[in-house]
Image 1: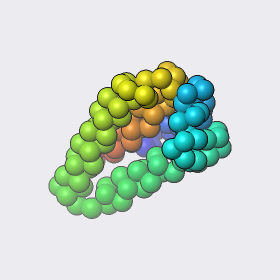
Image 2: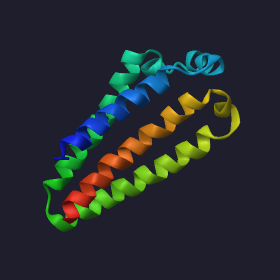
Image 3: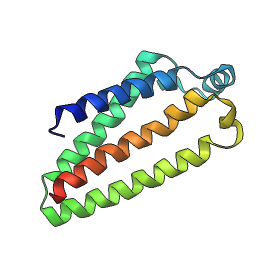
Amino acid sequence: MRNSSLYIFLIVLIVLDAWLLAHPNLIGRAGIFFFDYSAIETFPKALGTVSLVVGVIALMAWGVRQLSQPLSIGITVALLAGAVYYLFQSFTQYSTGVYKLTGAGFRAGAILLPGLVVLVLGESLLRRLR
């Protein structure tokens, strides 16, 4: 990610995702308390959690880029496929059942996190293919 506008966009999305995750509606708050989702119960904790996830993925993508090109592309494609599957699973999970009652913002934040992972890995793959 050499382009500074991409960094800024990613930082804005991380802050937005953390804010959405930290602000569920009343039913969502009860679920967070009941299931002990302490990593996202406040904005600073949610910001740290989202930043950590995106940071680890970015570090993994950077490490994989240091390998030979065919191996790097293969591993990145596999990671990207897993991330897309995770994004699809998150979308289906948070669009049905009890999670549907947690509020649109919280659901969007829960779906945005795997979207950020797809964004970082997709950018890494495009960079490696160039």
